[in-house]
Length: 67
Image (cartoon, rainbow, N blue to C red; front, top):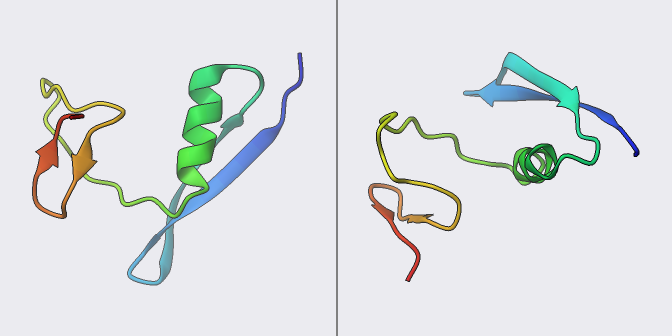
């Protein structure tokens, strides 16, 4: 089992904000999160009870389920 510690900082309007860090390891969820954080993501708050999940798309205003 391999493990790699990774750290990202959030950039908000050009300034460093909070950070997130964890060991990516062999956990598939952590690997997916590491890949997402490394891809210059857009972070959008969604309701806790929403069905939005991996595979949905976002057009800048609305979310759409996979087709």
